[in-house]
Image (tube, rainbow over all chains, first blue to last red):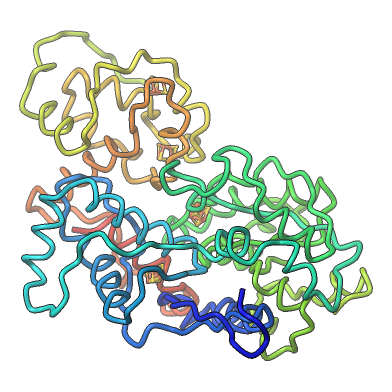
Length: 299
Length: 139
Ligand code: SF4
Ligand code: SF4
Ligand code: SF4
Ligand code: SF4
């Protein structure tokens, strides 16, 4: 961490969804990091990571998009960069691991990208913001910056799949990760036990099978409700869409379903650091978090 | 599954089995059918052939049954099965290989047509959803 006058710089890859529906994730990332003296610098040029890692080993084409981004990081004279989107993180990190292990695949990609001025040589590290906060900033330091402790707020931390699977990509325990719980505790809130925290939400089936997602959301959010959580925090805009926007479908499926707000972990940080609505953008949530926060004397 | 299976080793060494093993990078015969993959699968309720059954059918080279299964389009590559398999088999990779075998057969056998969704449905979907669905379900 730098001192007040010299903020640390960190190259930042936002991803497409943070520049579209998930603006709240983008602005809360940038604002909360500024409060920690970290200046996140969005990459001057980046492209969609492709969202999913191709599991078929002969599919080199789908690795081109993530690798192009790693080349852009090199061109920004950096050896590492951060993303807060769990899905971008997973896809970029896995492509990176894959080409480091398979010289032939990397060569094919570099050949395909022969018009690029820079060759990729496996020399960029992909970081997730949660990992950066834990390992570089430290939760003690983070706790010192809290101006509005989230006292009494009960938070269920949802990891979904992409932060913990596969294990080569996980920066915490695969079955029982705790990094978000520790972050939430540093903000003054109370993390609840949450047995569905790494249970998949159904992902992209949301596109044409919202009824499938309704079932997943009912189970996952129902489990958070049983633990008397006030809200759920996530790190992935697809989890957020399914758990927040698909609550209407869950309610149609199960009339006893209880609506509950879903926030990005960065919004919770920004809130505890005293950032205003322009950094929170609660207007973009489907389920309004203000009543739940007000019930705990926050908001 | 209500299909009747005739167990035979006739197709176990077929080109199809060899291709699935190559593309997925998995040794199908390592599976001892413990069922742990299916037990934790979040999509199992929507599948006609369970993940452990997919591995079994793949060992036996049952190409038609596998490529016609609804399951290969329901699996979302969440990797729960992979991370729990005691034999370290990457079931999700096997299923991806099956999906891609179906998608690469030149028939444009797509399992999603974004333009068939209502404009309202399309308007709310974030790019992270549509891009991932198209990468997984279309050729
Ligand atoms: S997750 Fe999305 S939307 Fe996000 S950058 Fe990667 S692909 Fe594009
Ligand atoms: S979107 Fe759903 S499927 Fe993806 S990581 Fe989040 S939990 Fe898993
Ligand atoms: S968990 Fe592994 S060994 Fe067990 S049935 Fe599934 S693939 Fe086979
Ligand atoms: S990767 Fe596919 S088969 Fe495996 S648990 Fe997830 S949805 Fe089920």
